[in-house]
Length: 340
Image 1 (tube, helix red, strand yellow):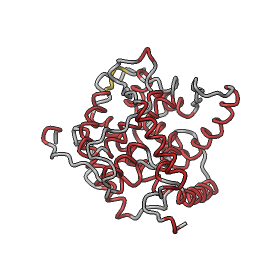
Image 2 (cartoon, one colour; image 1 turned 120 degrees about the horizontal axis):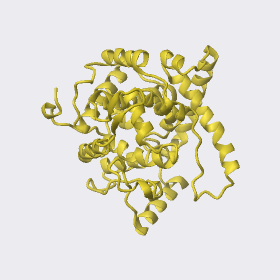
Image 3 (cartoon, helix red, strand yellow; image 1 turned 90 degrees about the vertical axis):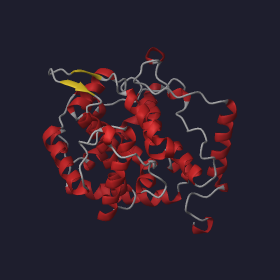
Image 4 (tube, one colour; image 1 turned 30 degrees about the horizontal axis):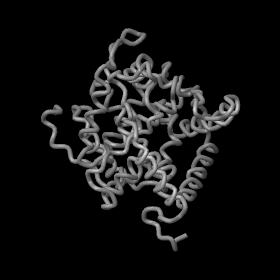
């Protein structure tokens, strides 16, 4: 089936499980996992090696990219437009890798692999850090990931027909196609450069982030399929699995007290507000903060999302709303004040 013959795309809504999990802050604990497993796909890894500046500005790069990626799930009637924007960021990402293989980010199989990893991010964050999923819920999430993928207007040819077929696809790609390349090693060995606006000595900054990155590598090892873990040369014991499960349960319980203003990504939070009628349905979409913009020498390149600047009024309003929420003047979604 070609993109032209694909049925009209229907955006996901607040009744979906994908809305429930994808915008949750807990997905941030899986940054090394998703970065590595995406880059292990040969064509995707080659594109990152030759076109990305992730190592130069990892925090800014991830922070700004997440906004439109979230939008494909949470932007409602505008989600397909957001999907098209993301698709066009990849138009010029093509070339030949170090072994002579040609690649293009819009190769349907390559583009779908990236989407498949986001789908599995949802499955794994729910399984390990949000209380788990039933088989029926996994099938529902699979159906939703197909609906979500239609927002990009890509060929649906690579998409498995069922959750069972997807599991076979995931196992096969992990076993037979993924490889350890430089882009993957860069994720495993990543150092987070200190942003200029952080008033902290660089050695202290580095010491703060070392255990965080190491912890994410450990989580990634646990979430990798055995074939991927073996390729990466990572060790994982039954004891590690027990500790990860206990850690996940602790995270689940701790997040019962976390308000939506912290737990949800801003793009997701705004979507819930629109769905509940607390904001107009056509309210401007939440964009990444201006400080996450690409470096000046990269601005204007078609592969970059460039967050627009907010007015002083918008910044003040956002700060006031969040301050009142965190002060306990507004309860988190679905939790009454007396429940505590």
